[in-house]
Image (cartoon, rainbow, N blue to C red; front, side):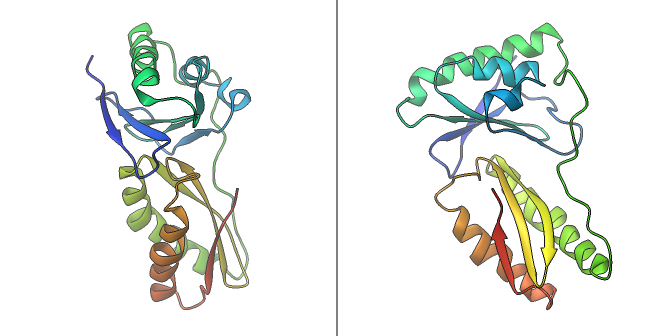
Length: 184
């Protein structure tokens, strides 16, 4: 098994590509050890000293490290943990993964559908290339609430991505959108 690695815009994260699907649909974010307990792979990665976050995308795994740990020392054990997981045949999750998105209804449902469509078709593919994901959390009084995950969470350029990229695009296509705000 050959696992490729790619840098991300966030220097604290690396993107690992195992050469096979990771998630059949959606994504999974593990911001801490407790969240990782539902995934044997995420749990194994958190056993490594210096791992501070794990994220699964369609065909990649993003690992975030502590500031005081160098990738030169952490990358080999991460590669080993990923390889052992895939060779073992263990499932990715020990239980069903919960849905990431909130459901919005009411008079704004058409606007929400348009927002989600733009996020799914234009934003998510670009964000996934950088090792992350973006989750729609809500729309209220012209404000779109989005949650950044994976390499995008805590990335120095995530504010610029939200404001200059996503907010401008949504405002262009959907006049009801006046602002985009991050949700932690």
